[in-house]
Image 1 (tube, rainbow, N blue to C red):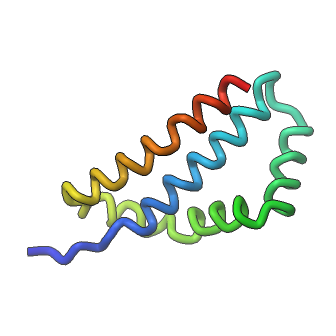
Image 2 (tube, rainbow, N blue to C red):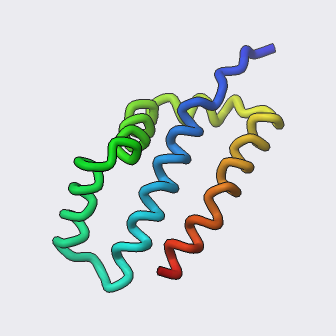
Length: 96
């Protein structure tokens, strides 16, 4: 029986993708512009929590494929619940 690798990096990647998606959904309603790039840079520079989430997602991205290959039912449910927790925020970001 294989030893479980866990899903730490998958969760961090999922958090990073969702946080970035919410930011981009709010910013890019009128199209993509230089102001959007500057806003992202400003957010990364000034929002320590957002920056930490982006760095965690980036730093662990190499482990994601191996972790995904080894996901068991409980871990799959944990990932699904994490994604579900982001749905209200994602929908709200798209409506703004």
